[in-house]
Image 1 (cartoon, rainbow, N blue to C red):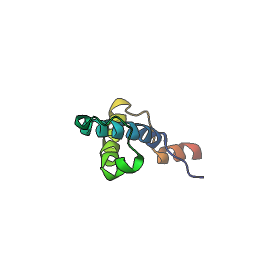
Image 2 (cartoon, rainbow, N blue to C red):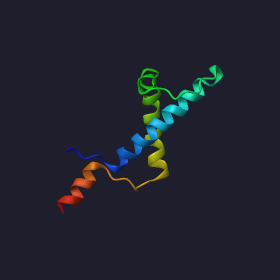
Image 3 (cartoon, rainbow, N blue to C red):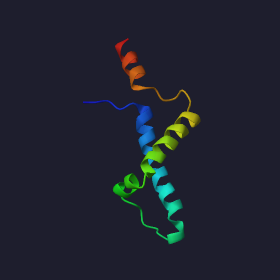
Length: 78
């Protein structure tokens, strides 16, 4: 079973929220208020932009809190 680091878990949580926000900002003039599907977000490049913003947000807001998977594994070996 693969292990996901706390850092990436937090990034994935934020990534979808940010992608939907970006989508809504781009489509507010069309008065589209439905939540987009994952495929729409991926196709429009919203998930890619959201990933970058989520990583930046997690590292700026919570410095040193999240460990990389390598650090987690090194700690468990000790």
